[in-house]
Image 1: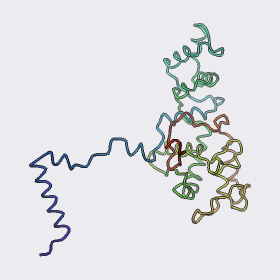
Image 2 (image 1 turned 120 degrees about the vertical axis):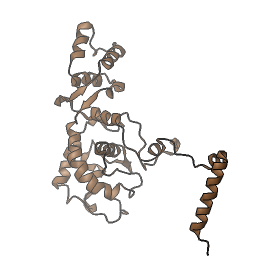
Image 3 (image 1 turned 60 degrees about the horizontal axis):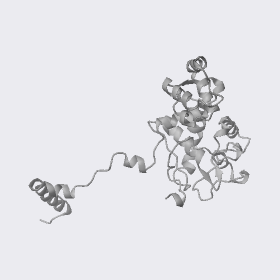
Image 4 (image 1 turned 90 degrees about the horizontal axis):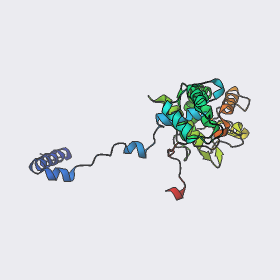
Length: 269
Protein backbone atom coordinates (compact mmCIF):
# COMPACT_ATOMS: atom_id res chain seq x y z
CA UNK A 1 0.00 0.00 0.00
CA UNK A 2 1.39 3.39 -0.95
CA UNK A 3 2.20 5.73 1.91
CA UNK A 4 0.44 9.04 1.45
CA UNK A 5 1.17 12.41 2.98
CA UNK A 6 -1.82 11.91 5.29
CA UNK A 7 -0.34 8.64 6.60
CA UNK A 8 3.00 10.35 7.25
CA UNK A 9 1.30 13.18 9.13
CA UNK A 10 -0.59 10.75 11.35
CA UNK A 11 2.63 8.83 12.03
CA UNK A 12 4.44 12.04 12.95
CA UNK A 13 1.67 13.10 15.34
CA UNK A 14 1.69 9.69 17.03
CA UNK A 15 5.46 9.81 17.55
CA UNK A 16 5.20 13.37 18.83
CA UNK A 17 2.50 12.39 21.34
CA UNK A 18 4.63 9.52 22.65
CA UNK A 19 7.64 11.78 23.07
CA UNK A 20 5.61 14.41 24.93
CA UNK A 21 4.20 11.79 27.32
CA UNK A 22 7.58 10.21 27.88
CA UNK A 23 9.42 13.47 28.37
CA UNK A 24 7.41 16.61 29.16
CA UNK A 25 10.49 18.74 28.53
CA UNK A 26 10.37 17.74 24.88
CA UNK A 27 6.82 18.97 24.59
CA UNK A 28 7.76 22.24 26.21
CA UNK A 29 10.71 22.69 23.89
CA UNK A 30 8.65 22.33 20.73
CA UNK A 31 5.47 24.01 21.94
CA UNK A 32 4.38 26.99 19.84
CA UNK A 33 4.34 30.08 22.08
CA UNK A 34 0.97 31.73 22.49
CA UNK A 35 0.48 35.29 21.28
CA UNK A 36 0.68 37.65 24.25
CA UNK A 37 -2.71 38.95 25.30
CA UNK A 38 -3.61 42.10 23.41
CA UNK A 39 -0.67 41.91 20.99
CA UNK A 40 -2.81 41.62 17.87
CA UNK A 41 -5.01 44.49 18.99
CA UNK A 42 -2.02 46.64 19.88
CA UNK A 43 -0.07 46.08 16.67
CA UNK A 44 -2.93 45.81 14.20
CA UNK A 45 -5.75 48.22 13.34
CA UNK A 46 -7.81 48.94 16.42
CA UNK A 47 -10.77 51.02 17.44
CA UNK A 48 -10.71 53.94 19.83
CA UNK A 49 -11.39 53.07 23.46
CA UNK A 50 -14.52 54.33 25.22
CA UNK A 51 -12.61 57.01 27.13
CA UNK A 52 -11.11 58.28 23.87
CA UNK A 53 -14.57 58.42 22.30
CA UNK A 54 -15.77 60.42 25.29
CA UNK A 55 -12.84 62.83 24.88
CA UNK A 56 -13.86 63.58 21.28
CA UNK A 57 -17.41 64.22 22.46
CA UNK A 58 -16.13 66.69 25.05
CA UNK A 59 -13.97 68.53 22.51
CA UNK A 60 -16.78 68.75 19.95
CA UNK A 61 -19.65 69.64 22.28
CA UNK A 62 -21.52 72.92 21.92
CA UNK A 63 -22.03 74.14 25.48
CA UNK A 64 -24.76 76.52 24.29
CA UNK A 65 -27.00 73.46 23.89
CA UNK A 66 -26.65 72.77 27.64
CA UNK A 67 -25.57 69.15 27.16
CA UNK A 68 -25.75 66.57 29.93
CA UNK A 69 -22.29 66.45 31.47
CA UNK A 70 -21.28 64.76 34.72
CA UNK A 71 -18.08 65.42 36.66
CA UNK A 72 -17.23 63.69 39.94
CA UNK A 73 -16.82 65.84 43.04
CA UNK A 74 -13.26 64.66 43.66
CA UNK A 75 -12.31 65.81 40.14
CA UNK A 76 -13.85 69.23 40.78
CA UNK A 77 -12.05 69.55 44.10
CA UNK A 78 -8.73 68.64 42.49
CA UNK A 79 -9.38 71.17 39.74
CA UNK A 80 -10.13 73.96 42.22
CA UNK A 81 -6.94 73.19 44.10
CA UNK A 82 -4.68 72.93 41.05
CA UNK A 83 -5.98 76.11 39.41
CA UNK A 84 -6.57 78.12 42.59
CA UNK A 85 -4.28 80.91 41.38
CA UNK A 86 -6.21 81.45 38.14
CA UNK A 87 -8.38 84.57 38.23
CA UNK A 88 -11.28 82.75 36.57
CA UNK A 89 -11.48 80.07 39.27
CA UNK A 90 -13.91 80.85 42.12
CA UNK A 91 -12.36 81.92 45.41
CA UNK A 92 -13.81 81.47 48.85
CA UNK A 93 -15.95 78.67 50.28
CA UNK A 94 -19.33 80.03 49.16
CA UNK A 95 -18.35 80.55 45.52
CA UNK A 96 -16.61 77.19 45.37
CA UNK A 97 -19.68 75.46 46.78
CA UNK A 98 -21.77 77.21 44.16
CA UNK A 99 -19.40 75.91 41.49
CA UNK A 100 -19.62 72.38 42.90
CA UNK A 101 -23.44 72.54 42.64
CA UNK A 102 -23.46 74.00 39.13
CA UNK A 103 -24.57 72.05 36.07
CA UNK A 104 -21.94 69.84 34.50
CA UNK A 105 -21.77 71.86 31.29
CA UNK A 106 -21.12 75.00 33.35
CA UNK A 107 -18.27 73.28 35.19
CA UNK A 108 -16.85 72.08 31.88
CA UNK A 109 -17.08 75.61 30.54
CA UNK A 110 -14.65 76.71 33.25
CA UNK A 111 -12.34 73.78 32.40
CA UNK A 112 -12.27 75.12 28.85
CA UNK A 113 -11.79 78.72 29.93
CA UNK A 114 -8.62 77.95 31.90
CA UNK A 115 -7.38 75.36 29.34
CA UNK A 116 -7.39 72.57 31.94
CA UNK A 117 -6.82 69.92 29.25
CA UNK A 118 -5.90 67.19 31.70
CA UNK A 119 -9.42 67.49 33.11
CA UNK A 120 -11.39 67.40 29.85
CA UNK A 121 -11.48 63.63 29.75
CA UNK A 122 -12.68 63.45 33.35
CA UNK A 123 -15.95 65.06 32.31
CA UNK A 124 -18.39 62.45 31.02
CA UNK A 125 -20.71 63.30 28.14
CA UNK A 126 -24.19 61.77 28.43
CA UNK A 127 -25.50 61.40 24.90
CA UNK A 128 -24.07 62.88 21.72
CA UNK A 129 -23.05 66.35 20.59
CA UNK A 130 -25.44 67.53 17.89
CA UNK A 131 -22.74 67.66 15.23
CA UNK A 132 -21.71 64.07 15.98
CA UNK A 133 -25.33 62.92 15.78
CA UNK A 134 -25.39 64.28 12.23
CA UNK A 135 -22.07 62.56 11.52
CA UNK A 136 -23.36 59.15 12.67
CA UNK A 137 -26.78 59.36 11.07
CA UNK A 138 -26.00 60.97 7.75
CA UNK A 139 -22.37 61.59 6.84
CA UNK A 140 -20.80 58.39 8.16
CA UNK A 141 -23.62 55.95 7.47
CA UNK A 142 -24.72 57.21 4.07
CA UNK A 143 -21.53 58.61 2.58
CA UNK A 144 -18.38 57.38 4.29
CA UNK A 145 -19.42 53.73 4.61
CA UNK A 146 -21.37 53.49 1.37
CA UNK A 147 -19.04 55.41 -0.95
CA UNK A 148 -15.86 56.89 0.50
CA UNK A 149 -14.48 53.87 2.34
CA UNK A 150 -15.08 51.39 -0.52
CA UNK A 151 -13.55 53.86 -2.98
CA UNK A 152 -10.50 55.07 -1.03
CA UNK A 153 -10.26 53.63 2.49
CA UNK A 154 -9.50 49.93 2.12
CA UNK A 155 -6.05 50.06 0.56
CA UNK A 156 -6.54 52.16 -2.57
CA UNK A 157 -4.83 55.11 -0.87
CA UNK A 158 -1.71 54.08 1.00
CA UNK A 159 -2.08 56.41 3.95
CA UNK A 160 -5.78 55.81 4.55
CA UNK A 161 -7.62 52.92 6.19
CA UNK A 162 -11.18 53.13 7.50
CA UNK A 163 -13.21 50.60 9.45
CA UNK A 164 -16.35 48.90 8.15
CA UNK A 165 -19.61 48.22 9.97
CA UNK A 166 -19.51 45.97 13.01
CA UNK A 167 -21.00 45.23 16.38
CA UNK A 168 -19.29 48.21 18.03
CA UNK A 169 -20.78 50.70 15.61
CA UNK A 170 -20.42 53.71 17.91
CA UNK A 171 -16.68 53.16 18.33
CA UNK A 172 -16.29 52.42 14.61
CA UNK A 173 -18.01 55.68 13.72
CA UNK A 174 -15.86 57.72 16.12
CA UNK A 175 -12.67 55.96 15.03
CA UNK A 176 -13.35 56.74 11.38
CA UNK A 177 -14.15 60.33 12.31
CA UNK A 178 -10.88 60.61 14.23
CA UNK A 179 -8.86 59.11 11.37
CA UNK A 180 -10.38 61.52 8.87
CA UNK A 181 -9.59 64.50 11.09
CA UNK A 182 -5.93 63.44 11.29
CA UNK A 183 -5.03 62.29 7.78
CA UNK A 184 -3.66 64.65 5.15
CA UNK A 185 -2.80 63.59 1.63
CA UNK A 186 -0.34 65.88 -0.13
CA UNK A 187 -0.78 68.34 2.73
CA UNK A 188 -4.55 68.59 2.18
CA UNK A 189 -6.75 67.50 5.12
CA UNK A 190 -9.49 64.94 4.72
CA UNK A 191 -11.70 67.24 6.82
CA UNK A 192 -10.80 70.92 6.50
CA UNK A 193 -12.49 73.09 9.12
CA UNK A 194 -11.12 76.30 7.62
CA UNK A 195 -12.18 75.54 4.05
CA UNK A 196 -14.88 72.86 4.27
CA UNK A 197 -15.42 72.74 0.49
CA UNK A 198 -11.76 71.76 0.02
CA UNK A 199 -11.97 68.75 2.33
CA UNK A 200 -10.75 65.67 0.50
CA UNK A 201 -13.77 63.67 1.62
CA UNK A 202 -15.75 66.03 -0.62
CA UNK A 203 -13.22 66.77 -3.36
CA UNK A 204 -12.71 63.09 -4.13
CA UNK A 205 -16.45 62.62 -4.55
CA UNK A 206 -16.69 65.29 -7.27
CA UNK A 207 -16.18 64.72 -11.00
CA UNK A 208 -12.43 65.10 -11.55
CA UNK A 209 -12.84 67.94 -14.03
CA UNK A 210 -14.67 70.08 -11.46
CA UNK A 211 -12.56 69.26 -8.39
CA UNK A 212 -9.72 71.42 -7.07
CA UNK A 213 -8.14 68.24 -5.69
CA UNK A 214 -9.31 65.45 -8.00
CA UNK A 215 -9.65 61.85 -6.87
CA UNK A 216 -6.49 59.77 -7.38
CA UNK A 217 -6.16 58.52 -10.94
CA UNK A 218 -5.09 55.01 -9.96
CA UNK A 219 -8.23 54.16 -7.97
CA UNK A 220 -9.92 51.28 -9.83
CA UNK A 221 -13.54 51.58 -10.95
CA UNK A 222 -13.87 55.07 -9.46
CA UNK A 223 -17.08 56.98 -10.04
CA UNK A 224 -18.02 60.43 -8.68
CA UNK A 225 -20.62 60.55 -5.93
CA UNK A 226 -21.76 64.16 -6.35
CA UNK A 227 -23.05 65.70 -9.56
CA UNK A 228 -21.33 69.00 -8.76
CA UNK A 229 -20.87 71.44 -5.87
CA UNK A 230 -24.58 72.30 -6.03
CA UNK A 231 -25.56 68.72 -5.22
CA UNK A 232 -27.61 68.77 -1.99
CA UNK A 233 -25.64 65.83 -0.64
CA UNK A 234 -22.44 67.83 -1.12
CA UNK A 235 -23.76 71.02 0.48
CA UNK A 236 -25.15 69.06 3.44
CA UNK A 237 -21.69 67.70 4.28
CA UNK A 238 -20.19 71.17 3.84
CA UNK A 239 -22.69 72.51 6.38
CA UNK A 240 -21.90 69.65 8.76
CA UNK A 241 -18.18 70.41 8.66
CA UNK A 242 -18.98 74.01 9.59
CA UNK A 243 -20.60 72.75 12.81
CA UNK A 244 -17.34 71.17 14.01
CA UNK A 245 -15.50 73.17 16.65
CA UNK A 246 -13.03 75.34 14.73
CA UNK A 247 -10.59 75.48 17.65
CA UNK A 248 -9.94 71.77 17.15
CA UNK A 249 -8.21 72.26 13.81
CA UNK A 250 -4.91 70.36 13.73
CA UNK A 251 -5.59 68.82 17.13
CA UNK A 252 -5.31 65.16 18.03
CA UNK A 253 -7.87 65.56 20.84
CA UNK A 254 -5.18 64.54 23.32
CA UNK A 255 -5.45 60.97 22.03
CA UNK A 256 -2.48 58.66 21.51
CA UNK A 257 -3.39 56.49 18.54
CA UNK A 258 -1.39 54.99 15.69
CA UNK A 259 -3.32 55.51 12.50
CA UNK A 260 -3.83 52.19 10.70
CA UNK A 261 -1.74 51.99 7.51
CA UNK A 262 -0.76 55.61 7.98
CA UNK A 263 2.91 56.06 7.09
CA UNK A 264 4.81 57.35 10.11
CA UNK A 265 7.69 59.85 9.85
CA UNK A 266 10.99 58.00 9.48
CA UNK A 267 12.39 59.65 12.61
CA UNK A 268 9.71 57.96 14.73
CA UNK A 269 10.32 54.46 13.38
